[in-house]
Length: 251
Image (cartoon, rainbow, N blue to C red; front, side):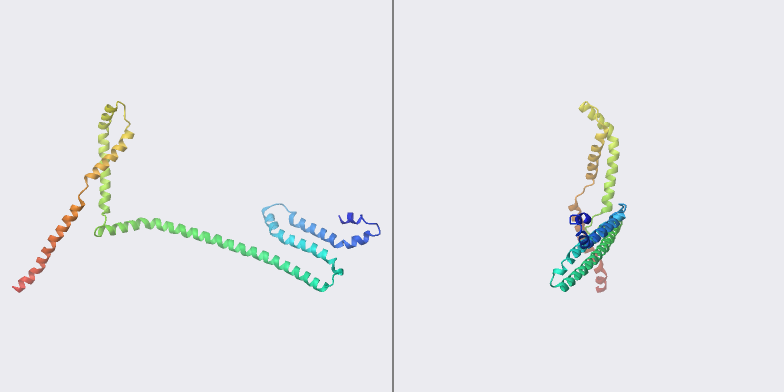
């Protein structure tokens, strides 16, 4: 490219033009080698990751070298050459620091990402542990609370309630299989069609279960009233029994 540019000038000027464009020709060759070394490999996952990590510093160095090479041609025409060179060197120093901070930030991001993954795994394991412990303790807690409420005054008698439900289900099942043929004949004669036992038996079981469970119903307020009367009757008897020895001693 630079040889073609030099061909535009007369023959006696071409050596001077090639000498002046020497830094640019060197930069073009160097950056071509750098690009082939960076992106000239097989496109595997490892090389793609390396190219992504190197592309930002390479672009910064390439832009800096071209800018530096172009600014060197302006040194003879500048008044504050020393200050300009100092600022140029400080700019390269800042560029190196930026590259260092860039990779340092990537390492910190990776460390934070690993920490986030470890924290998420710990949180998930703790949640699974708490869930398993809760599933194991839930029946025990339910049994403990039920038993405590069962033996306390005014508590729900869960054992008797469960036995009542079980016995009602057993009786409903027995009566369902006993009454199914009779009710099937009755419904067949009433409707004039054949009734399916699969449809009739669940409805009959629910009805019989409610009927049997309702037969065990009792007057709760009556029980409370009888319990209160019994307590009022027991208290005077206990008072008379406790006062008996004292009365005999006084006599």
